[in-house]
Length: 391
Length: 85
Image 1 (cartoon, helix red, strand yellow):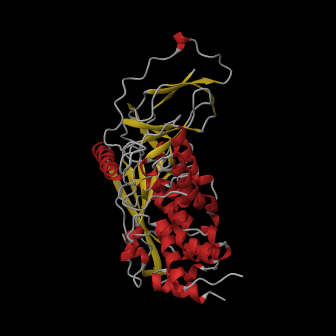
Image 2 (cartoon, each protein chain N blue to C red):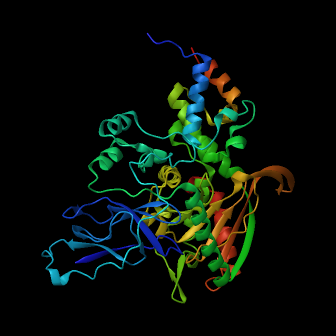
Image 3 (cartoon, rainbow over the protein chains, first blue to last red):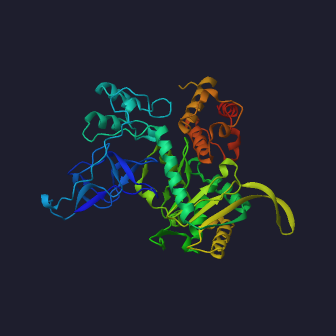
C-alpha cells in the first residue's frame, strides 16, 4: 500500500491546499500521471503520482489545507490485495477549514483574473448557462486559466468538486513571502561567491539567424535556448555545480534539470525545470520552454517541474540589465545569470570592432565548489557558445 | 468568395492577439506608435508568440529580420495591410 502525501514543491513550502482530485476512489493511476491539483503560495500545481496502482482511499477534501507530508490518499500498488481496515493509515491531521477568503463556486463573484474579462470558451459558456452555473467563481484549466467545457462539466456534476484558488492579490502577497523565505534562507546559509565573464556572441547569433532562417516560423529559437543548452553541457565538465545540498553535504545529480526563471506577469517568479536539458535538442528545448512559460503564467505547472531543478538559469537581459548577481535557490548550489546582449567595442585579432557581447555570471555555493572550478565552468560556456552548431 | 478584412478589423484582430499574450494589459490605452514591448512589458518569448500568432491569423510569412517592423500597432497594421494581395 502506498501513501500519497502532500509534496514539497519548493524550498519553503510548508503546506498546500487541495484544489481538486483528478482521480476518484477506485480509479487506476499510473506513475507520473496527475492525481491532484494543489494550491501553493506560488501557484496551483498539477501533482503527479509517484506510483502506479488503484486509488484506494482519498483522505483529503478539496479546500482542505494540509501540511507537507500529510497522507492525502492511499494507493494500492499493482498486484497488492485490497486493504483490510486495520491496514489503513492514520487519518490525516485535522485539516483547517477551507479558505475563508475564497469566494465559493456558484455564487456571483467577480472573475478571479485581474479585472480582465472572463476567459471561457463559447461551448463552456453555453453549458454553464444550461446548468445554471456561474462561471465567475470557477478555476479554469485551459490556456491562461480559461474555463473549458470540462471545467463546467466538472463543476456541474460536483462529484470531484473544486475549491476556488486564492484571489490574485492574496496569492501575490503569499508568493512574496515564499520568495522572501527562500532567499533569506539562501543568504543566511549559503556562502555565495560570484564570478562573471564577457562572451562574444557574434558567432552564436550569426548561427542562430541562419538556423532560424531555415526553420518554419513556429519552430524558431530564442538565444536564451542556446544559453540553457550551453549551461547544461558545461555542467558535464564541472558536475559539482549540478547538485543539491542535503543534510550537511552536497549530493551531485546525475541528471541535469535546468530551473528556468520565469517572471509572472503580475509579479513574482517561478523557476520550473527543463528536464534533462543536456540531452535535449535545441528545438525540443525551445518547445518545452514555450510550454513551460505558458503554463507557469496560467498557473498549471507540474509538481516535478517545481521540485526537480538541479541548477537555475536566469536571463534578465529583457529588462536591459547587463549583469546578474544571483541569489542561489536552496537546496541548489549554483545559479547562472545572463544579461542583455549588447553591442560594444571588442578587440579581436588586434582590431577594435563592435561585437554583440553578453555577460554571464555564476553565483555558487563555496561549501561545494571553489572559484577555480567556477571559472572553468564559465570558460566552458564561452567555448560552447563559440561552437553553436554543436549545441 | 472571401472578403478582405478592413483596417478596423485588422486592428481589432491584432489587439485581440496581444490580449491573449498580455491578458492583464489595458489595450485601450496603447500608444499605436510606441513599441509593444515597452508598453506591455513583453519579453522575447511573448513577442515571438505574438509574431507567430500574426503569422497564423493573417497567413503571412515573417522572416526574423523583419520582426522589428512588428513592434508597434501602427507598423504592424501597415505590414499586415501591405501583405494583402
